[in-house]
Length: 482
Image (tube, rainbow, N blue to C red; front, side, top):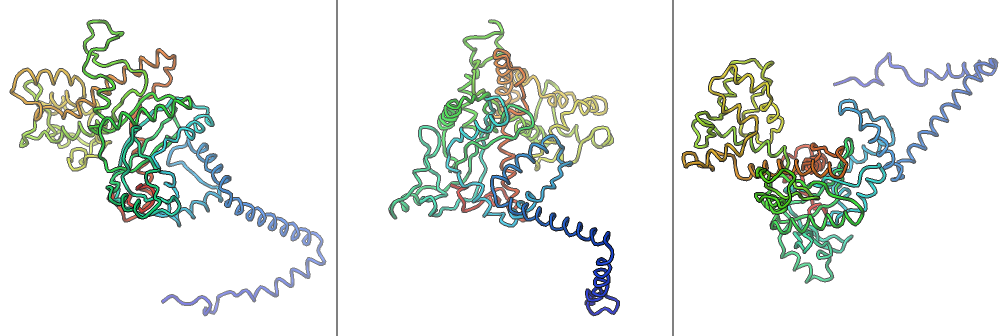
């Protein structure tokens, strides 16, 4: 056991300094310079104490703390994540308090207004205060939660239910208000919310974070018509504040995908085209707003997953003429070529890790294709697939006869339609921005649903350390599940 410091013989005690203090006091009475120096030290100490007290008082003003947050964000936005330095004591103390009050309590603070209402006014203030163009890229996504219903005395409503979607494709928060026990019983008979939908608005400018404009709970039972109505309601709400929607993104949900196909009239020759009558390769209408864009990150993950399933022992193959695309070529390359040349990792070819987005970028690098051509014989099919081009020619060749059926020899229909939508939409966006005289707004890296994923990631960061399941991480009795 560690020895008590007070029992140590050589331990200094404060009483041993009393005699020295008396000597200094007597000397200060005789020495004017020493007396003035001690007086200045006392004044400086009192001034420092008053500054600390004033700084502590600033923490109680929410407006001051929010202003400090805004200033800190603007100061740090041009600094890399590893170079962030936060030295404001007021914000430090505020963050400590947030950490102490974290977990479910923090959910109640952050999600106090999750009612399925489009916050168009807040978005307008955000764009105006930063001098940003009044045009945004809207994205929508959902994440699973563990539903829990309970009565909220503050709202006089039952939260946690999946409210019916109206003509606007959004729930009405007033449907959850109760005036009697009968109302509560009726609401309890409705299904619980199993997912939370979030709609994000991304300013078309680098360095500015997206803003959540709508959140609501659902049982995930809706149709493409609901998606269409919701997008129309959001577009109308933003248009009333002078804000336009350039693109609308999702992650490949079948209902959202069907809405996008109908919005673009994908597969039909457009009534008006600028490519000439013989340009039958472009089969979509030139829409002017809410241009659909599928999330390219999710699309890359789908194409990688399909590629990794194309093993010799599998029934799924990917033929290209007399060649095939298979991950066996990548495995051979990693065995014969050193890592400093190919830059690949073992996890890049593991099918279990379907959300490894960085692996898509590493596998598709041109250097990998060059090394395959040089060191792995018969890898022409794999190189062709890794270029992620000519999907139409490949699909047309497969449909020429029944030798290779599409379900087992081609990518999934969902992935193929996403590729077609992205290809057409990028052309439509370029043509629109050219016609509007705003080519500087062409920022395709912002046209995705990754803003929603980042929002979900931020929410999960407030949960307990031991939580790992997405459903468990977002479970709460707060209005977030309402």
